[in-house]
Image (cartoon, rainbow, N blue to C red; front, side, top):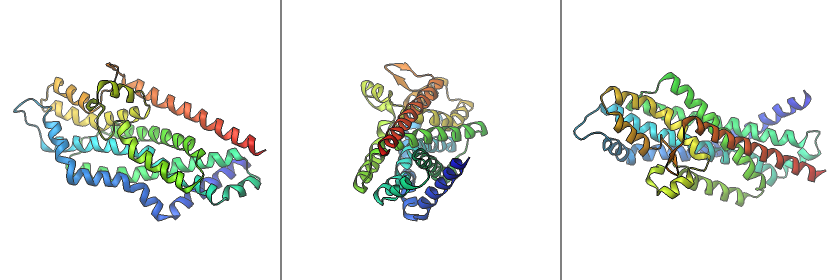
Length: 302
């Protein structure tokens, strides 16, 4: 019970340290907000034209549905990527404690090393969740303005998908940044993840646009399925609305394949339930790796 109180105190301390620096919080949100801004100002028509091209020739649907489904596709991309990129940025407290030698104070205090490591993980998860919800709020205001067709059930599952994605991102950041102890290395890792992750998981460009070999290789990465599950729940209501307006199922399947609602690995479609299994399985592997790293580091200190 005493160790639990210490954990709660450390989580509060780590969370306050993060939000105390307004610049750090702003930098965590800047990437998803820039993506949303670029979409609204420059790329919106490109996505809308892509959806229109999937309809039968001469077929018309309500403009709000098409604009909404394009926005929903973007939001699924932003949130799935942010669950990882923000986690790497918000884990800065753990690295700063190493740089500022604050971690040395913890070593001589009556707090177990495992408790300190767990506090970083919990605080990072909590901070990333708050940032994600702020981004989601802004994005949903946009969706409500252009066309909202997300059901209550899908909205609930989007929150669940975000939690799964944040868990994956937080664990991945914890494992990778356990080996980072300098400001330069921290900046390099954050830059690398921010610039590459969105492309290799199919968030910025659908995997259907890549060659079959590359798409199948990227389909082996668990982050791809974080994108897939949230994309299905974001776009489900819009596709139902398109179906009610007479869009043939064949054309809806084209949209699903073209925009990665359906994912394929070596020409075999991955069942939707398997997407959750792969993502959560990856979380279990990362958790085991994180626990092993923490145990080994604590043994070295003794």
